[in-house]
Image (cartoon, rainbow, N blue to C red; front, side):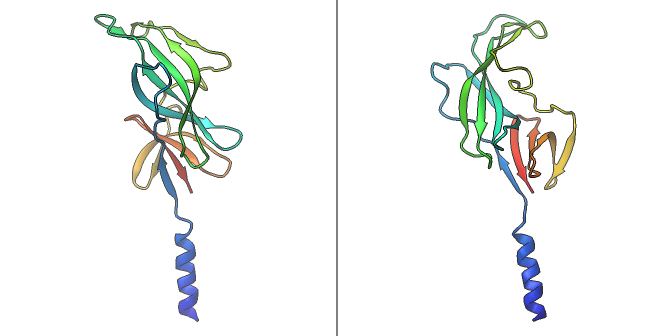
Length: 158
């Protein structure tokens, strides 16, 4: 009987293992988007628990020495499990120009809080499964959005 109890404890403990799901970039590319894609960044959770973020595309060609090309930002979404990525509408444009002198224009109703690629939004780190991540935000069920500085976003579920 004791063996069955111990086995039950072991099995029930393993049923609650955490998961770390990489958020894949949506495919195919948005219509008429010939630019170069940059990895998408998770920003937050929608009211239904799904994940939203933004993707950036370099849309301008080489604009000269020290000049940064223009970029177009799209909304990206994933389901509650961090799967089924899809592109949404354009949320902003970054003009070409010298770094630090470019102009970001947001398409209403989007703002810097809902249309940006910031892989360290809170300047906080957490360690999950032995790896250090940049903390983004937490959902009501305890799931967290995490980013790596190399440009990948993850959904961690306890």
